Image 1 (cartoon, rainbow, N blue to C red):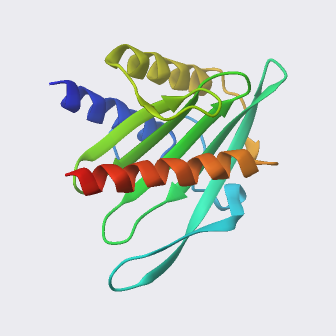
Image 2 (spheres, rainbow, N blue to C red):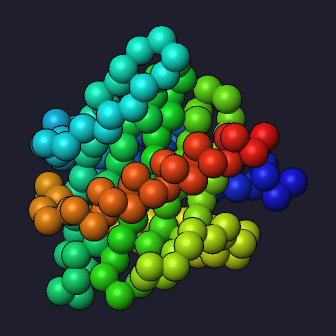
Length: 168
């Protein structure tokens, strides 16, 4: 039950950024994969068969004079996989992963330089509510600037995905 709820929460968050095709009203929000949010950096990785250099996207919102930065890494090789970092200054950082084709996902958080921790159902729901509020406020996103810290976090959360995959 808890895994199913987690998967639905993560799917909902990704669909809010118009990344996966769920039947959720689209309102006036632009997809995070819009070319205006495309960053110069690439997500490079290799599978047994091929080398990938996938896109990374980033947007930011200004909330009470603090930037909320959202970075998306396209981890797709042979399925639709994405990692998302959400970072508001002086708050926990959230990292989300979804493999839409295989119905796998997780949501984790971390404080400063500590390790990534699994989110409880309560934290997942709270994070979902926060993402809903961003959409409801009609804030206008701009292309992410100065995102080196978030890029490092994106790579960390991708390593978490790989570590969890090896444990299975």
